[in-house]
Every structure is written in structure tokens, then in C-alpha cells.
Image (cartoon, rainbow, N blue to C red; front, side, top):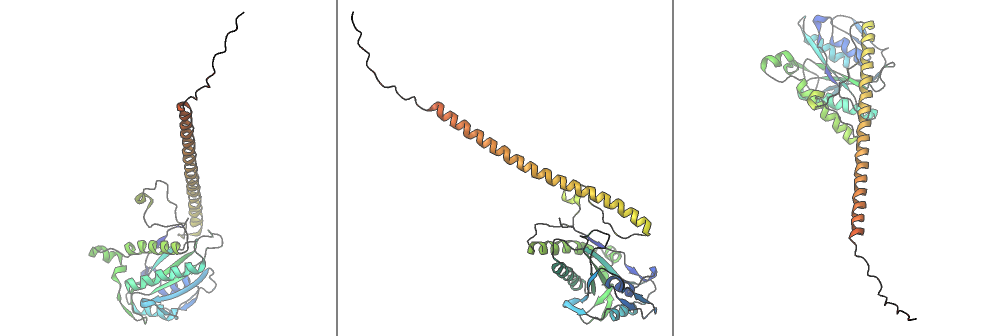
Length: 295
């Protein structure tokens, strides 16, 4: 069954000691020298990166990732500047690798066109010791506008949830979540899969079962391992419950069919019985009485 997951991560803020160059290097699995700080962020040994493409509005693409994200760092002057934002999406395992990549890149291009920003899409395969279905993509989004040539502009206020709240506007997530649902379902439909996803909660869809919990990163390796083990156990229970519900539904359908067949057979037998009872009695052959012999 296809799984829906889209999460907007906390913004990459300079005040938190983070940078767009480090974020891009980590997600793409490359080394980037930060011209502003002189620090080289080297993630060449990082495994699991399937591909990475830096997309711009108008279906444009940049090859020099280091130069672009360094220009983003230079563009923002404030010490507490938000330099980038990130969205993580789960790619459906029902699709082959090529279709998953095309789907992720299409969504990144839709983000770039919708908000007029750069979208750096890095596709990651499942971790070695994790769930082998966890194909996902990290989309690093510039906090400022970018044109088709990679030239930077003003801050993209539609990506800022605080600005949207103050202005009474819908934030970016209200567009991202249903858009991702629509694109995933279209891809599944083209692939001939019967699976579908929904961005709505179980409560909104009228589903009574407990939702599973995303297993991801967190503060501290020991705490993360313990928390994730609990989440995996709970998710395993939810999966077993879902399978049991599916089996019960199939048995219910089978029972209803058998009951319908039995009822049809009973009706046929009853009609046949009534037909026999109502059939006219065949007249007996007339035989003249035998003459009585006299003694």
C-alpha cells in the first residue's frame, strides 16, 4: 500500500549555526567550500544518494551547485537570516526507480514554478539497517526568489509561515500537501497500480484505526534508537491490524457471496417444489368392469 509522507522541516537559519552550503553538500553527497566562512563541508563519503538536480523556474537546471548555494549565502546579510527551507517526501515503492525519480523532479519543478525559487532535489535510497521501502527525496528550497538563470531576488514571503499568518494568507504547506497527493496518484494510475494516497488525516477520512508514526532522525543517537524502536513496534502492530482488517473484509465478502448462493438455491428448490405440488394429476386409464360369473 502506497504511503503518503510530506514534511516541511524547520528552516535553515544562520542563527542556528546552519548554512545553505552545508545543507546542500550533505543532501547531494558532495563537498562544498563555503566562501563566507572558509569551511569545507565534505560529504563525499556519504552513501545512499541516488541523484541530485538543482532546478529553477521554467524547467531550467544548474550544474554548479556549490556556486549557487554560495551565492545564496552571500545574498543574505543578516546574522539571523533564513537562507533555505526543506521539504521531505516519501516516494512510492510501487513505482520503478526511473518513475520515482521523474515524480520527485516533477514535484521539485512544480515548487520552483509555483513560488519562483530554486529547488535542489536529492533522491535518497533506504538506509542499510532501515525499512527497504523508505525511498525518499530531500528538496532544498531557496528562501529568496530565483530566476531561470539562477539570479537571486527578494525574499519569497509565501514560503514564510509567519508572514502568511500575519497577512491572512494560506502558507506553502496548504498547496504542497494536496499537490503532492495529486502527482503521486497520477503516477500510480499511469503505472497501473491500484494504490492511492491521501494527504488528509485518518480522522478527516473517517478511518478509525491508529495512524503509523514516521521513523526519522532526532536529537541524540541513543534516544533516537530507543524512540525509533518504539515507533517501529507500534507501526508493526498497526500494519498487522490493517492486514487483519483486510482479511476480515475479504472473508465477509466471501461469506456474503456464499449466503447469496445458498439463498438462490433455496429459492430454486422452493419454486421447483411448488411446481410439483401444483402439477395436474394424470387421468387413470378407463377399464370396464369385469363380468361376474354365475355359478
